Image (tube, rainbow, N blue to C red):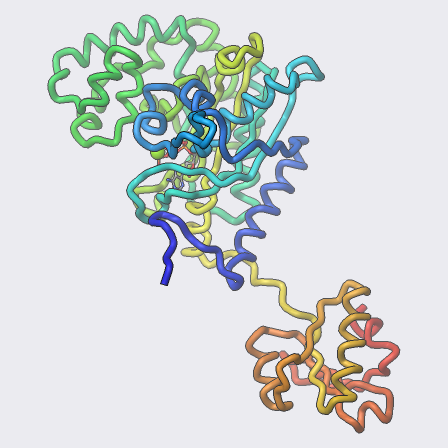
Length: 414
Ligand code: ATP
Ligand code: MG
Protein backbone atom coordinates (compact mmCIF):
# COMPACT_ATOMS: atom_id res chain seq x y z
CA UNK A 1 0.00 0.00 0.00
CA UNK A 2 1.25 3.46 -0.86
CA UNK A 3 0.70 5.82 2.07
CA UNK A 4 0.51 9.57 2.40
CA UNK A 5 3.48 11.71 3.47
CA UNK A 6 3.87 12.42 7.18
CA UNK A 7 1.98 15.49 8.36
CA UNK A 8 -0.66 15.43 5.61
CA UNK A 9 -4.33 14.50 5.85
CA UNK A 10 -7.07 13.36 3.50
CA UNK A 11 -10.44 14.99 3.80
CA UNK A 12 -12.78 12.04 3.24
CA UNK A 13 -16.26 12.33 1.69
CA UNK A 14 -18.01 11.92 5.04
CA UNK A 15 -16.06 14.83 6.51
CA UNK A 16 -15.79 17.33 3.67
CA UNK A 17 -19.00 19.09 4.75
CA UNK A 18 -17.08 20.39 7.79
CA UNK A 19 -14.56 22.06 5.51
CA UNK A 20 -17.32 23.46 3.34
CA UNK A 21 -18.98 24.85 6.46
CA UNK A 22 -15.76 26.64 7.49
CA UNK A 23 -15.04 27.85 3.99
CA UNK A 24 -18.51 29.24 3.36
CA UNK A 25 -18.47 31.02 6.73
CA UNK A 26 -15.11 32.52 5.74
CA UNK A 27 -16.43 33.67 2.37
CA UNK A 28 -19.61 35.06 3.87
CA UNK A 29 -17.69 36.99 6.55
CA UNK A 30 -15.33 38.40 3.92
CA UNK A 31 -18.36 39.49 1.87
CA UNK A 32 -19.88 41.30 4.85
CA UNK A 33 -16.66 43.28 5.28
CA UNK A 34 -16.24 43.93 1.56
CA UNK A 35 -13.08 41.83 1.08
CA UNK A 36 -12.58 40.19 -2.33
CA UNK A 37 -10.90 36.86 -2.93
CA UNK A 38 -7.33 36.77 -4.25
CA UNK A 39 -5.73 33.53 -5.48
CA UNK A 40 -1.98 33.31 -5.75
CA UNK A 41 0.19 30.33 -6.78
CA UNK A 42 0.93 27.50 -4.37
CA UNK A 43 4.63 27.95 -5.15
CA UNK A 44 6.67 31.12 -5.53
CA UNK A 45 10.30 32.05 -6.04
CA UNK A 46 11.97 31.34 -2.71
CA UNK A 47 12.92 35.00 -2.42
CA UNK A 48 9.25 35.95 -1.95
CA UNK A 49 9.18 34.18 1.41
CA UNK A 50 12.79 34.82 2.38
CA UNK A 51 11.98 38.53 2.10
CA UNK A 52 8.31 38.54 2.88
CA UNK A 53 8.42 36.37 5.97
CA UNK A 54 11.89 37.30 7.12
CA UNK A 55 15.28 35.68 7.52
CA UNK A 56 15.10 35.40 11.30
CA UNK A 57 11.81 33.49 11.48
CA UNK A 58 11.30 29.79 12.21
CA UNK A 59 9.48 29.52 8.90
CA UNK A 60 12.40 30.68 6.76
CA UNK A 61 15.06 29.18 8.98
CA UNK A 62 13.81 25.66 9.21
CA UNK A 63 10.30 25.04 7.92
CA UNK A 64 10.20 25.78 4.20
CA UNK A 65 9.66 23.23 1.45
CA UNK A 66 12.29 24.54 -0.94
CA UNK A 67 13.58 22.79 -4.05
CA UNK A 68 15.36 23.57 -7.27
CA UNK A 69 13.12 23.03 -10.30
CA UNK A 70 14.26 21.59 -13.62
CA UNK A 71 15.08 25.08 -14.82
CA UNK A 72 17.49 25.58 -11.92
CA UNK A 73 15.28 28.10 -10.03
CA UNK A 74 14.82 27.98 -6.31
CA UNK A 75 11.12 27.42 -5.66
CA UNK A 76 9.25 27.23 -2.34
CA UNK A 77 5.78 25.91 -1.52
CA UNK A 78 3.89 28.70 0.25
CA UNK A 79 4.37 28.41 4.02
CA UNK A 80 1.85 31.21 4.68
CA UNK A 81 -0.42 33.49 2.67
CA UNK A 82 0.73 37.06 3.18
CA UNK A 83 3.99 37.19 1.20
CA UNK A 84 2.44 35.88 -2.03
CA UNK A 85 -0.46 38.32 -1.75
CA UNK A 86 1.94 41.24 -1.26
CA UNK A 87 4.02 40.05 -4.21
CA UNK A 88 0.85 39.92 -6.32
CA UNK A 89 -0.42 43.30 -5.04
CA UNK A 90 2.82 44.92 -6.16
CA UNK A 91 3.39 42.93 -9.36
CA UNK A 92 -0.15 43.67 -10.60
CA UNK A 93 0.06 47.34 -9.68
CA UNK A 94 -2.97 47.18 -7.39
CA UNK A 95 -1.40 49.96 -5.32
CA UNK A 96 -2.14 52.36 -8.19
CA UNK A 97 -5.88 51.67 -8.02
CA UNK A 98 -8.50 52.66 -5.47
CA UNK A 99 -7.22 52.15 -1.92
CA UNK A 100 -7.77 50.55 0.47
CA UNK A 101 -7.77 47.15 -1.23
CA UNK A 102 -9.36 44.42 0.90
CA UNK A 103 -8.50 40.84 0.01
CA UNK A 104 -9.03 37.37 1.43
CA UNK A 105 -7.86 33.84 0.61
CA UNK A 106 -8.33 30.24 1.58
CA UNK A 107 -5.17 28.33 0.81
CA UNK A 108 -3.09 25.27 1.62
CA UNK A 109 0.24 26.05 3.33
CA UNK A 110 3.31 23.88 3.70
CA UNK A 111 5.79 23.80 6.58
CA UNK A 112 8.31 21.16 7.48
CA UNK A 113 7.40 20.78 11.16
CA UNK A 114 7.14 17.91 13.61
CA UNK A 115 3.55 16.75 13.09
CA UNK A 116 1.26 16.65 16.15
CA UNK A 117 -2.33 17.59 16.95
CA UNK A 118 -2.97 20.95 15.27
CA UNK A 119 0.45 20.98 13.63
CA UNK A 120 0.73 19.54 10.13
CA UNK A 121 3.04 19.77 7.16
CA UNK A 122 0.20 20.64 4.85
CA UNK A 123 -2.44 22.78 6.53
CA UNK A 124 -4.95 25.40 5.46
CA UNK A 125 -5.46 29.05 6.21
CA UNK A 126 -8.26 31.54 5.83
CA UNK A 127 -6.53 34.89 5.61
CA UNK A 128 -7.42 38.53 5.08
CA UNK A 129 -5.03 41.27 3.92
CA UNK A 130 -5.91 44.96 3.60
CA UNK A 131 -3.66 47.48 1.88
CA UNK A 132 -3.55 51.25 2.00
CA UNK A 133 -5.18 52.16 5.32
CA UNK A 134 -3.04 53.44 8.18
CA UNK A 135 -5.73 54.44 10.67
CA UNK A 136 -6.23 52.30 13.77
CA UNK A 137 -9.86 52.01 12.64
CA UNK A 138 -8.87 49.41 10.09
CA UNK A 139 -6.94 47.45 12.76
CA UNK A 140 -10.14 47.34 14.80
CA UNK A 141 -12.15 46.34 11.74
CA UNK A 142 -9.79 43.48 10.88
CA UNK A 143 -9.99 42.20 14.45
CA UNK A 144 -13.79 42.48 14.24
CA UNK A 145 -13.78 40.55 10.97
CA UNK A 146 -11.77 37.80 12.63
CA UNK A 147 -14.09 37.77 15.61
CA UNK A 148 -17.20 37.74 13.40
CA UNK A 149 -15.80 34.72 11.56
CA UNK A 150 -15.04 32.89 14.81
CA UNK A 151 -18.53 33.60 16.18
CA UNK A 152 -20.18 32.59 12.92
CA UNK A 153 -18.61 29.15 13.06
CA UNK A 154 -19.51 28.80 16.73
CA UNK A 155 -16.12 29.10 18.44
CA UNK A 156 -16.54 29.69 22.16
CA UNK A 157 -14.12 30.36 25.02
CA UNK A 158 -11.55 32.16 22.98
CA UNK A 159 -9.31 34.97 24.18
CA UNK A 160 -8.13 37.88 22.08
CA UNK A 161 -4.62 39.08 22.93
CA UNK A 162 -3.34 42.31 21.48
CA UNK A 163 -0.01 44.09 21.57
CA UNK A 164 1.87 46.81 19.75
CA UNK A 165 5.39 46.09 18.60
CA UNK A 166 5.91 49.69 17.51
CA UNK A 167 7.71 50.93 14.44
CA UNK A 168 11.38 50.95 13.38
CA UNK A 169 11.95 54.05 15.49
CA UNK A 170 10.60 52.79 18.81
CA UNK A 171 12.20 49.44 18.24
CA UNK A 172 15.67 51.00 18.08
CA UNK A 173 15.47 51.99 21.75
CA UNK A 174 13.67 48.81 22.69
CA UNK A 175 16.25 46.60 21.00
CA UNK A 176 18.96 48.33 23.02
CA UNK A 177 17.13 47.67 26.27
CA UNK A 178 16.28 44.12 25.28
CA UNK A 179 19.86 43.32 24.29
CA UNK A 180 21.12 44.83 27.52
CA UNK A 181 18.78 42.50 29.39
CA UNK A 182 19.62 39.46 27.26
CA UNK A 183 23.38 39.95 27.21
CA UNK A 184 23.71 38.65 30.78
CA UNK A 185 22.07 35.36 29.73
CA UNK A 186 23.33 35.17 26.14
CA UNK A 187 25.04 31.80 26.71
CA UNK A 188 21.74 30.18 27.73
CA UNK A 189 19.97 31.11 24.47
CA UNK A 190 19.41 28.49 21.75
CA UNK A 191 21.62 28.77 18.65
CA UNK A 192 18.89 30.35 16.58
CA UNK A 193 18.29 33.01 19.24
CA UNK A 194 22.02 33.73 19.47
CA UNK A 195 21.76 34.60 15.81
CA UNK A 196 18.56 36.60 16.42
CA UNK A 197 20.30 38.52 19.19
CA UNK A 198 22.19 40.48 16.56
CA UNK A 199 19.70 40.46 13.70
CA UNK A 200 16.30 40.83 15.36
CA UNK A 201 16.36 40.37 19.16
CA UNK A 202 12.60 40.83 19.57
CA UNK A 203 12.06 37.51 17.81
CA UNK A 204 13.65 35.81 20.83
CA UNK A 205 10.41 36.53 22.72
CA UNK A 206 8.61 34.22 20.29
CA UNK A 207 11.03 31.28 20.58
CA UNK A 208 9.47 27.93 21.53
CA UNK A 209 12.64 26.66 23.25
CA UNK A 210 11.93 26.29 27.00
CA UNK A 211 15.15 28.00 28.12
CA UNK A 212 14.55 30.95 25.83
CA UNK A 213 10.93 31.18 27.00
CA UNK A 214 12.06 31.36 30.62
CA UNK A 215 14.55 34.09 29.80
CA UNK A 216 11.89 36.02 27.88
CA UNK A 217 9.59 36.03 30.93
CA UNK A 218 11.28 39.00 32.58
CA UNK A 219 12.41 40.86 29.49
CA UNK A 220 11.55 44.56 29.22
CA UNK A 221 8.19 45.31 27.60
CA UNK A 222 7.98 46.93 24.17
CA UNK A 223 4.97 48.90 25.42
CA UNK A 224 7.30 51.01 27.57
CA UNK A 225 9.22 52.07 24.47
CA UNK A 226 6.50 53.10 22.01
CA UNK A 227 6.92 56.45 20.25
CA UNK A 228 4.05 58.96 20.47
CA UNK A 229 2.57 57.94 17.14
CA UNK A 230 2.59 54.21 17.94
CA UNK A 231 1.27 54.86 21.44
CA UNK A 232 -1.64 56.94 20.07
CA UNK A 233 -2.39 54.23 17.51
CA UNK A 234 -2.52 51.54 20.19
CA UNK A 235 -4.73 53.67 22.45
CA UNK A 236 -7.14 54.39 19.59
CA UNK A 237 -7.34 50.71 18.71
CA UNK A 238 -8.25 49.87 22.28
CA UNK A 239 -10.93 52.52 22.51
CA UNK A 240 -12.47 51.31 19.21
CA UNK A 241 -12.47 47.72 20.45
CA UNK A 242 -14.19 48.86 23.63
CA UNK A 243 -16.80 50.77 21.61
CA UNK A 244 -17.43 47.63 19.56
CA UNK A 245 -17.76 45.56 22.72
CA UNK A 246 -14.76 43.37 21.87
CA UNK A 247 -13.03 42.00 24.94
CA UNK A 248 -9.25 41.74 24.81
CA UNK A 249 -6.16 41.28 26.93
CA UNK A 250 -2.88 43.05 26.39
CA UNK A 251 0.06 40.68 26.10
CA UNK A 252 3.42 42.39 25.52
CA UNK A 253 5.03 38.98 24.77
CA UNK A 254 3.16 38.61 21.48
CA UNK A 255 5.54 39.55 18.70
CA UNK A 256 4.25 37.23 15.95
CA UNK A 257 6.41 35.07 13.75
CA UNK A 258 6.95 37.40 10.84
CA UNK A 259 9.67 40.03 10.60
CA UNK A 260 7.75 42.86 8.99
CA UNK A 261 5.02 43.40 11.54
CA UNK A 262 4.65 46.93 12.89
CA UNK A 263 2.37 48.41 15.54
CA UNK A 264 -0.67 46.19 16.10
CA UNK A 265 -0.27 42.43 16.53
CA UNK A 266 -2.97 40.10 17.81
CA UNK A 267 -3.84 36.48 18.42
CA UNK A 268 -7.00 34.56 19.23
CA UNK A 269 -6.10 31.71 21.57
CA UNK A 270 -8.22 28.80 22.75
CA UNK A 271 -7.54 26.90 25.96
CA UNK A 272 -9.52 23.93 24.66
CA UNK A 273 -7.13 22.25 22.21
CA UNK A 274 -3.88 21.97 24.12
CA UNK A 275 -0.52 23.35 23.15
CA UNK A 276 -1.46 24.43 19.64
CA UNK A 277 -4.03 26.90 20.96
CA UNK A 278 -3.39 29.86 18.68
CA UNK A 279 -6.08 29.50 16.05
CA UNK A 280 -5.72 32.91 14.45
CA UNK A 281 -2.97 35.49 14.35
CA UNK A 282 -2.33 38.73 12.58
CA UNK A 283 -1.08 42.25 12.61
CA UNK A 284 0.01 45.33 10.77
CA UNK A 285 2.96 45.19 8.36
CA UNK A 286 3.58 48.72 7.20
CA UNK A 287 7.03 48.03 5.72
CA UNK A 288 6.27 44.97 3.63
CA UNK A 289 4.80 46.44 0.44
CA UNK A 290 7.79 48.74 0.18
CA UNK A 291 10.11 45.77 0.70
CA UNK A 292 8.57 44.33 -2.48
CA UNK A 293 9.05 47.57 -4.39
CA UNK A 294 5.47 48.82 -4.08
CA UNK A 295 5.98 52.14 -2.32
CA UNK A 296 5.01 53.27 1.14
CA UNK A 297 1.69 51.46 1.42
CA UNK A 298 0.59 49.98 4.69
CA UNK A 299 -0.84 46.53 5.16
CA UNK A 300 -2.68 44.65 7.84
CA UNK A 301 -4.10 41.16 7.99
CA UNK A 302 -4.54 37.87 9.78
CA UNK A 303 -4.57 34.17 9.08
CA UNK A 304 -6.64 31.51 10.79
CA UNK A 305 -5.55 27.86 10.80
CA UNK A 306 -8.52 25.82 9.60
CA UNK A 307 -7.31 22.49 11.02
CA UNK A 308 -7.03 24.01 14.50
CA UNK A 309 -10.50 25.49 14.18
CA UNK A 310 -11.84 22.09 13.14
CA UNK A 311 -10.24 20.53 16.22
CA UNK A 312 -12.06 23.09 18.34
CA UNK A 313 -15.40 22.66 16.61
CA UNK A 314 -15.15 18.88 16.50
CA UNK A 315 -14.50 18.69 20.22
CA UNK A 316 -17.53 20.94 20.79
CA UNK A 317 -19.59 18.95 18.26
CA UNK A 318 -21.02 22.18 16.92
CA UNK A 319 -20.82 21.81 13.13
CA UNK A 320 -24.28 21.55 11.54
CA UNK A 321 -24.93 18.10 10.03
CA UNK A 322 -24.28 17.35 6.41
CA UNK A 323 -27.06 18.22 4.00
CA UNK A 324 -28.32 14.80 2.93
CA UNK A 325 -29.95 13.38 -0.19
CA UNK A 326 -33.54 14.55 -0.84
CA UNK A 327 -34.86 11.44 -2.59
CA UNK A 328 -33.61 7.94 -3.19
CA UNK A 329 -35.70 6.20 -5.85
CA UNK A 330 -35.91 2.45 -5.24
CA UNK A 331 -37.01 0.69 -8.44
CA UNK A 332 -38.14 -2.96 -8.74
CA UNK A 333 -37.79 -4.50 -12.18
CA UNK A 334 -36.24 -3.30 -15.42
CA UNK A 335 -39.09 -1.00 -16.49
CA UNK A 336 -39.06 0.71 -13.13
CA UNK A 337 -35.30 1.10 -13.39
CA UNK A 338 -35.63 2.98 -16.67
CA UNK A 339 -38.36 5.18 -15.20
CA UNK A 340 -36.25 5.82 -12.09
CA UNK A 341 -33.40 7.02 -14.29
CA UNK A 342 -35.83 9.47 -15.93
CA UNK A 343 -37.23 10.67 -12.60
CA UNK A 344 -33.87 11.37 -10.93
CA UNK A 345 -32.68 13.27 -14.02
CA UNK A 346 -35.78 15.48 -13.98
CA UNK A 347 -35.48 16.08 -10.22
CA UNK A 348 -31.85 17.14 -10.48
CA UNK A 349 -32.84 19.63 -13.17
CA UNK A 350 -35.29 21.10 -10.66
CA UNK A 351 -32.56 21.44 -8.03
CA UNK A 352 -33.58 18.42 -5.95
CA UNK A 353 -30.83 15.98 -5.08
CA UNK A 354 -31.75 12.48 -6.15
CA UNK A 355 -30.18 9.08 -6.57
CA UNK A 356 -31.21 5.57 -7.55
CA UNK A 357 -29.95 2.00 -7.73
CA UNK A 358 -27.28 0.98 -10.23
CA UNK A 359 -26.08 -2.21 -8.59
CA UNK A 360 -29.25 -4.31 -8.82
CA UNK A 361 -30.16 -4.46 -5.12
CA UNK A 362 -33.47 -5.93 -3.96
CA UNK A 363 -35.97 -3.56 -2.38
CA UNK A 364 -34.96 -4.36 1.22
CA UNK A 365 -31.28 -3.79 0.50
CA UNK A 366 -32.14 -0.55 -1.24
CA UNK A 367 -33.91 0.74 1.86
CA UNK A 368 -30.91 -0.27 3.94
CA UNK A 369 -28.59 1.60 1.58
CA UNK A 370 -30.84 4.69 1.53
CA UNK A 371 -30.85 4.69 5.32
CA UNK A 372 -27.06 4.41 5.43
CA UNK A 373 -26.53 7.39 3.14
CA UNK A 374 -29.11 9.38 5.14
CA UNK A 375 -31.68 9.91 2.38
CA UNK A 376 -34.59 12.04 3.62
CA UNK A 377 -37.16 10.30 1.40
CA UNK A 378 -37.29 6.97 -0.42
CA UNK A 379 -39.58 6.51 -3.43
CA UNK A 380 -40.76 2.99 -4.20
CA UNK A 381 -41.37 2.23 -7.85
CA UNK A 382 -42.67 -1.24 -8.86
CA UNK A 383 -44.90 -2.55 -11.65
CA UNK A 384 -48.05 -1.67 -9.68
CA UNK A 385 -46.89 1.94 -9.20
CA UNK A 386 -45.86 2.19 -12.85
CA UNK A 387 -49.27 0.98 -14.00
CA UNK A 388 -50.96 3.68 -11.87
CA UNK A 389 -48.38 6.33 -12.87
CA UNK A 390 -47.48 7.04 -9.23
CA UNK A 391 -44.54 6.64 -6.85
CA UNK A 392 -44.85 5.86 -3.14
CA UNK A 393 -42.68 8.34 -1.29
CA UNK A 394 -41.76 7.50 2.30
CA UNK A 395 -40.33 10.06 4.69
CA UNK A 396 -37.55 8.16 6.46
CA UNK A 397 -37.68 10.08 9.75
CA UNK A 398 -41.45 9.79 10.32
CA UNK A 399 -42.30 6.72 8.23
CA UNK A 400 -45.16 8.66 6.59
CA UNK A 401 -45.95 7.41 3.10
CA UNK A 402 -47.51 9.49 0.31
CA UNK A 403 -48.62 8.46 -3.17
CA UNK A 404 -47.35 11.07 -5.60
CA UNK A 405 -48.27 11.42 -9.27
CA UNK A 406 -45.20 10.69 -11.42
CA UNK A 407 -45.69 14.05 -13.13
CA UNK A 408 -45.69 15.91 -9.82
CA UNK A 409 -42.65 14.54 -7.98
CA UNK A 410 -40.72 17.82 -8.18
CA UNK A 411 -43.75 19.73 -6.80
CA UNK A 412 -43.86 17.34 -3.83
CA UNK A 413 -40.45 18.67 -2.80
CA UNK A 414 -41.26 22.36 -3.22
P1 ATP B 1 2.73 28.43 16.01
O1 ATP B 1 3.26 29.41 17.00
O2 ATP B 1 1.65 27.56 16.56
O3 ATP B 1 3.81 27.68 15.30
P2 ATP B 1 2.75 30.34 13.93
O4 ATP B 1 3.07 31.61 14.62
O5 ATP B 1 3.85 29.63 13.22
O6 ATP B 1 2.00 29.33 14.91
P3 ATP B 1 1.30 31.72 11.85
O7 ATP B 1 2.47 31.77 10.94
O8 ATP B 1 0.89 32.95 12.53
O9 ATP B 1 1.53 30.56 12.94
O10 ATP B 1 0.06 31.10 11.08
C1 ATP B 1 -1.30 31.48 11.36
C2 ATP B 1 -2.11 30.31 11.85
O11 ATP B 1 -1.91 29.17 11.03
C3 ATP B 1 -1.73 29.81 13.23
O12 ATP B 1 -2.36 30.58 14.22
C4 ATP B 1 -2.26 28.41 13.21
O13 ATP B 1 -3.65 28.37 13.48
C5 ATP B 1 -2.03 27.98 11.79
N1 ATP B 1 -0.81 27.16 11.67
C6 ATP B 1 0.47 27.57 11.63
N2 ATP B 1 1.31 26.54 11.47
C7 ATP B 1 0.53 25.43 11.39
C8 ATP B 1 0.78 24.03 11.18
N3 ATP B 1 2.02 23.56 11.02
N4 ATP B 1 -0.27 23.19 11.16
C9 ATP B 1 -1.54 23.64 11.31
N5 ATP B 1 -1.84 24.94 11.48
C10 ATP B 1 -0.83 25.83 11.51
MG1 MG C 1 5.02 28.03 13.70
